[in-house]
Amino acid sequence: MCAWARNVGVMLGLILVAAAGMAAERLGLGTVATPEQVAGWDIDVRPDGQGLPPGRGSALEGEDVYLQQCAVCHGEFGEGVGRYPVLVGGEASLATDDPLKTIGSYWPYAPTVFDYIRRTMPFGAAQTLSDDQVYALTAFLLFMNEIVGEDFVADQTSLPAVEMPNRHGFISDERPDVPSGALCMNNCQKAVTVTGWAQRINITPSANVTARAAPNPNEISPGRIAFNPCKACHSLAQGEHKVGPSLYGLFGRQAGSVSDFLNYSSAMQEVGIVWTEATVRAFLKSPSTYIDGTNMPFSGIQSDGQLDDLIAFLKHSTADQ
Image (cartoon, rainbow, N blue to C red; front, top):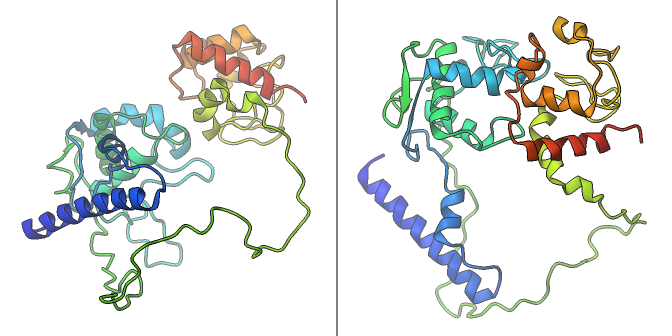
């Protein structure tokens, strides 16, 4: 991007922020966003690398992060588990009858791989990775797709320089985003009057609506928040298995004993423990230490308070209602 275009972009951004503030004050709607609030949302990274934060991460470092945070859904080699997306492979498949869209075959710009991971991953715990970890993950995924070497280090300079295989597979759509009309130059409306707030305007046909019961306080408890990362692999519904088994009826049953779940590790099937509050706590604190050979890649919860919250939530939510 040339300096002129970059400066114009900055000026337009400042104008839009100022305009939003003036609109909020003029119309009496909302509040003016503070610089800190704007900075919290302004995390986009552009295809040319603009917006990349300081930091670095190597492909080798990214392998450890990937195995801990990503492999449970995407597979150890990026092959995808169940119906989770495949991340590796698909070269020269886009023009075939069975295209496989992966980072290596489809993604056009390396900096936007970083952008997507930082915004949305890991599933259920988005934006919990450090910038260095995201750089390392990006480097590792590029390495797995044979786009960079194993000694590659991703940072603000090296990532935009990576040439993706499908970088020429997209075109710019020059059509205007919205229809344009003539600007008002004379006798324009000088004021805006708020004539109503959110209300029925008789567009939607009327229907009998059953009132919902008040939400269970447990549903907004700290334990439910602690369970969010678990939802990627486990359901609380009876018989609804994902990568891991349903947790319905967890307490009181033997480990590895759900008959219609077929993906237990041999270690889980042979350990012979019964899930109680004590054994669940020990397992969640360090899964691989408590059951050597478990398939569960989760690294564990070290906070006793968070463990208390999660176990209380599980005891309530997995019980036979």
